[in-house]
Structure formats: C-alpha cells, structure tokens
Image (cartoon, rainbow, N blue to C red; front, side, top):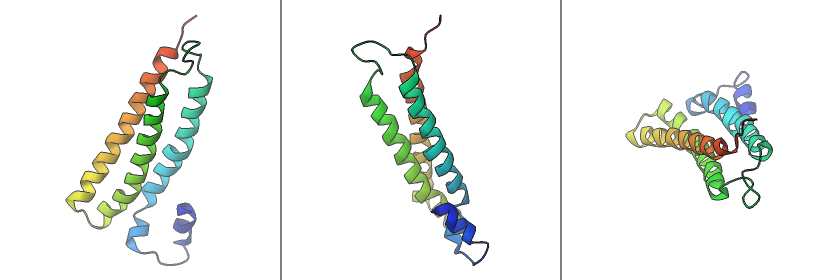
Length: 119
C-alpha cells in the first residue's frame, strides 16, 4: 500500500510526511518481507538441534519475531516523524527501533548457530 501511495506521488502532490516514508518503504520491504522469509526458511531448514527441541528455544524465536516486527512498526512511525519534525521523542523512538532490529538479528544468529554442524 505504501509503495502504491508513493507511486501516486508522481501524479499528485503528496504531503511532506508521506514523502518522508520512502526509506520506510524499503525497510518494510527488505526487513518485513524478504528478511522474514529468509529467517523463516532458515529456521525451518537448518539441521535439528535435538529430538526433544529440534528448533531450539522457541520462546527466543518468538522474541525475534516480535522484536523484528515491533522495530519495523516503530521505525515506520518515527522515521517520517523525525524527517518532518525532529523532536526528541521521535529520535528516541527511531533509536529504540534500531536497537530492536539489531537485537532481533543477533538473537536469531544465536538461535541458529548451535544448529550449524560441520561434516
């Protein structure tokens, strides 16, 4: 929907807040779509950890899911806000979104690393 709205900006004048969502569009596409697809396939396809817990700690996997999506939502709100009106609360929200996204990435790496087995 956001991509369609941004494309519509070539025909009609969009408000500055919508024009500021261009970087958000790419983050939502790459992290919200492509990266989550890759994470899901890797989570499913990597070798099992054990018979009791083949995928490892599922609570941490859910934490990755919520941190990634929560960080994306927070970024989608705060990044255009900072571009149009850089208040401290918006800057803190943008920083918090970055921390959530980085934390999700490192937790996921920590979840998959024990499942990497050499031959």
